[in-house]
Figure 1 (tube, rainbow, N blue to C red):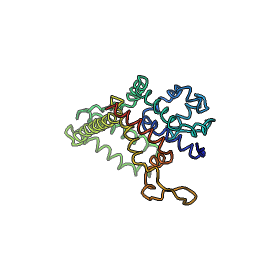
Figure 2 (cartoon, helix red, strand yellow):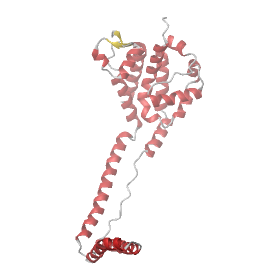
Figure 3 (cartoon, one colour):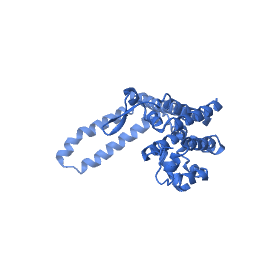
Figure 4 (cartoon, rainbow, N blue to C red):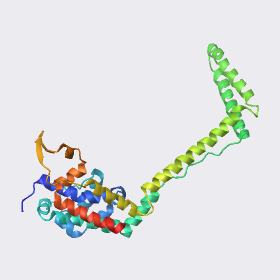
Length: 285
């Protein structure tokens, strides 16, 4: 069997994890500890212990690919049955996300992400608004008078119009039918309506992002994986450009990074992952 280069090994491991990442990336962030329950044999094959594996899994979700650092047997595994490693990862993924532990963790995260109900402002009556505004204006006048006493004669004279305006406003506020009272009451009403409408929208978005049944999310992630890795031309030609390999076909260069990753990993790994995911998806329908 032809020995793979380190670069090819890296690509292989990344794609082997791609299905796992796309399947549970948005749900598994809150429960990295589950990675410690990987099959012991898999850790032995990789040549790393569970703590290292846990860290690798955690960083995989942060950076969207599986970290391979520290895997002493990395090249040996990559040169062997690459598809089997991909299937092992997917088998673990399926066992976990379809099990009670994942469901419990999902529900906990779902409820923690639920938007809180808005604190609505008590809608004041016209009488309450009038009383509050009169009190605020009276305080403003008292404070201004105290400040003026400490000013120079010139500043005292300059501040008199401000003081007179405050007194005039206070007199107007004695009118129970002042137009401001209706305006301020309606302002309270509109503010509450805005908060309620915003909460309703947030709740709708939350229900879409966190459906009651986690299988809805799982199916979505599985389908996304299939969509991203569909139609890979494993026989596509490459050429050198600026010291890197690029596709001869410019259309392929415009493909997503996931599609290109699937190409680099090769047909064995990619199609094994796709077959596994297709079967899993059919079981969920």
